[in-house]
Image 1 (cartoon, protein in one colour):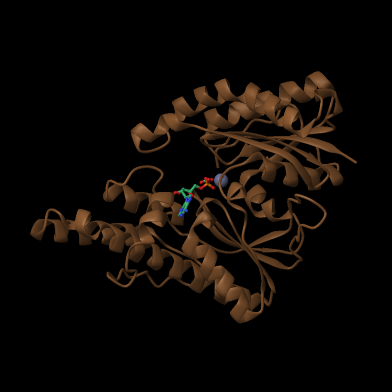
Image 2 (cartoon, protein in one colour):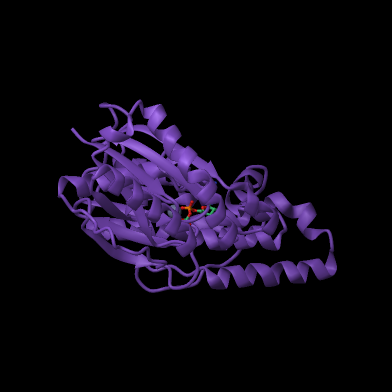
Length: 334
Ligand code: KG4
Ligand code: ZN
């Protein structure tokens, strides 16, 4: 039996979790509101907020788990990729905590953690994926199709050659002046809109790769042309625009994923990362699973965006392999 404390601070969420083996005991997330007024994450403000949050977040996670500091067997932390200043707060805290207790450190890659979030158990009845598993990882910074043969053998089948899907959604929301982060806002507004009202084309990209930067630009030009004729165009067609751009992105994501899964013959399919919170993507993956007779894994909302529970589960599987990190390890941005 092992007790693992996990720390996540790669972007704008400060999070700590405690796991008993692969069972989650607590997962505390402090989201930073300070960035909203700037329409994006301000790195300096993020590091400062992490510094303010980290001690109370860790204390709360330990208390909720009913675990004393001294009982922890290892400290897992996100080493990267992410914002350097933000990562540094979590990395330094983890090092100090582990050293004070004389316990080992475990470094975790943020992207692997998103994918492994499907192996978090809340109790003995939680169904976890079987290998081979294909996972579509869609976040604010990444869009990748990964083939997993085991927890840490991840083969990259395809990825975006420019912007991430989340970036395209956030940019579309910014162009329409909807607020930040755009993903959840577009998702909500799209529910009242007609997804076939406007058509946006996605590019032809080879294999299982994606590209979203052209879509972003064509959306911008389309709106600019409409606004010349009708300055109230966005206001009048907001819901239809959200529904149409969301459908375009989700269709593109699904099309490549379906081809990749068919080609490699996997029967377990998952989505992970912030954009996997999107309601259209979630329902489309579910339908696809029924049609193709795949077992699909859609993360609970609290495991879609950044959280320490996923860092803890990745840490647990490294703990089993005794893959410990040196105290001198620096964080990495990419
Ligand atoms: O994984 P994440 O929390 O941070 C990164 O590691 O990037 O992902 C954040 C991204 C943002 O682009 C945000 O707009 C998007 O996830 N997102 C959504 C939804 N909720 C969050 N996108 C679409 N629909 C949502 N409901
Ligand atoms: Zn993330």
